[in-house]
Length: 497
Image (cartoon, rainbow, N blue to C red; front, top):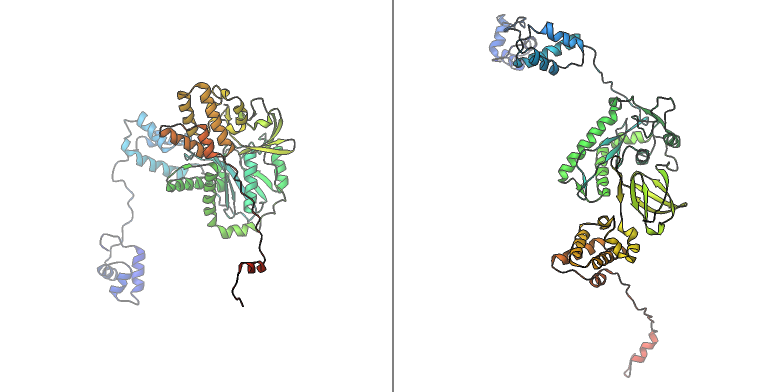
């Protein structure tokens, strides 16, 4: 065709077709013109000339390639074309033009292919079904918020290497053994079995990292023995050895961000809602490999009858202020526990409190950032004691944290500025007591705030009348069914046959 060189392949195809077709049809099938076909048959076609081997312009690297660039490339294999380019612009600007950057990059790339050192090679792997499960922690950078408050969290990511089946669990602390053990056991339960081998990186929660042969922590050794798997890890600092899980980390985080953008909101009402969102996202991913997963599931080892320990234990004493201190966090506890000695099971996302062998309470776990301290205050734990001495509320170190939400903060600000000090404290404590006793925290706070917006502070009596659940006295009725013969007495006179 006009403007295109005719290849040898087209010429051979044309001559082959000419045995069975006319000149016009053969030329059309070979994608050449009829006149070209005629020249081929008459021997007048000029074949494409060989590629030239001479330059059409001066070499821009002629004066610096051998004396400057080559010594740099031989000096250190980690020197990049951009590094050479910056050096030439700075030290040899009289011989090198910045417009020759692409020429320099192409020349260096060609030299590296011909004379450079060997490069890293990716070896594709084959994993038998049921053989290998890989897990890792990965930080989530997406700005997720819970009720408007940013949360720092990670994902525990577990994947079966052969089928690609995946399990993700949100963890709000660090890479602790509690988070690792809890996530791994939940992944085993979700998949319905245990692989022969579980691989991780050098987690300090699982490995002592002292270079010994028996390098497992005691708790990880017990977990391995309980579930019957063999533990392995990749070489320290070489993440691509766990490419199956590293690529999965990138994909799940990218998919999470896209799903949140499509949702048009990064905010969730509670942790459970966000964790459910993650779970649904992973379930959709797993549907794509459902057939492979069923094949691998049949090859997994059976689960043990019971789970293993996924918590650490601390013993604490409840102080006079009805608080305990665990992992640099102060928690309030129900005041009935003051003076008791508690055994605390520290899970990844909650604390279980035991008096003796009996579980008495659970607390949502908080994490103190860095080396700082923080506290978790729940007014319901101490409100009964506070009712007996409401004046203590005003100067309490936890005063603002005793207020459960913004509505109650608004109420306190109003009564504190419009009422006497003792009356304001008494009113606020009584409102909190009413909210705790009848589980009307949200509705009560919203009711009083709406009344304040209308220019009126409702009295405690009004609040009690509206939000106290009163028992309804239902009279007991004794209903007796009359006999049919008694209805005859109602019929007076007349003939009834």
